[in-house]
Amino acid sequence: MHMFTERTQVLLSREQADRLRRVARREGCSVGAVIRAAVDAYATATREQRQAAVRHLMAIDAPVDEWAAMKGEILRGATGEG
Image (cartoon, rainbow, N blue to C red; front, top):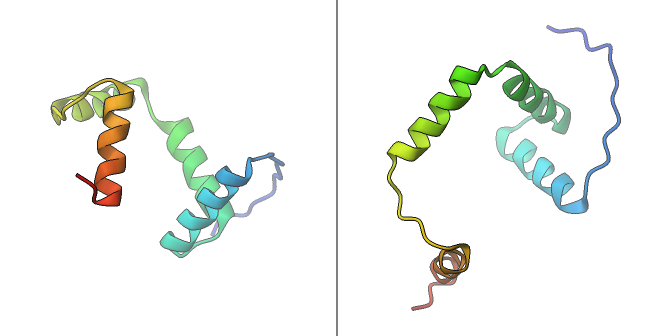
């Protein structure tokens, strides 16, 4: 088990804090554990890993449109309308 010795204070918006709590609840861990995992993922990713992730996302070849059109599709899908 790791010995945590450093403390950091971060100010979040209410929405960010809510999202963190939801992730922690979904993952069955503490908010601190979610933050530590995010820091590790962000700080240890190499340039090559980030580039590979972008290539992977681009290979999906998902339909893309202007934000207003995509937002409309998302909202229609979420609400079940037309």
